[in-house]
Length: 120
Ligand SMILES: [Zn+2]
Ligand SMILES: [Zn+2]
Image (cartoon, rainbow, N blue to C red; front, side):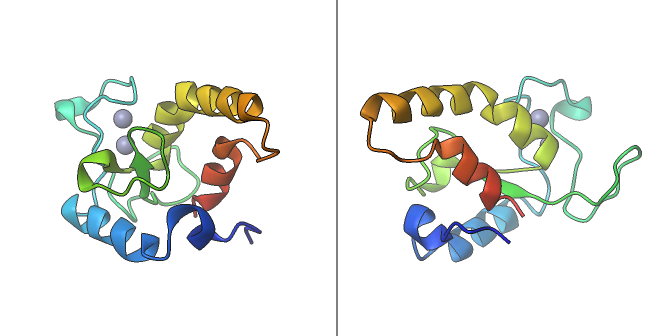
C-alpha cells in the first residue's frame, strides 16, 4: 500500500474530482496524442477494465494534471489517461519536477515519486 496520504497532496476532494473526470471521459483514455504516441482514430482506445493484447492486467485509468501541479484540479487541467499514456506523458514533467524540487531545497520528495505511487 502507498505510504502517501493522497489528501495531503491532492486535497480531500481528489477522490470525487478524479471520479468526475473519468466519468467525463466515459471511462476511456482521453489522450489524443498528448503523450507523444500515435493513437488509432486519433484518440487512445483504452477503456477502464479493457484487457488489450500483450498486457498482463486490465487498463486502469488515472487522472493526469496537465500543468504538473497536483493541487490544480481545474477540469481543464485534468485528463483521464490509461497507464500507458500517463507514463509517457509524465516523462518530461517528472524530470522537471525532480529538478524543481531539488532547487527548492525543501527536502520534499520529487513529485514524480508521489504521483507514481498515487496510481492504483
Ligand atoms: Zn491511453
Ligand atoms: Zn496517448
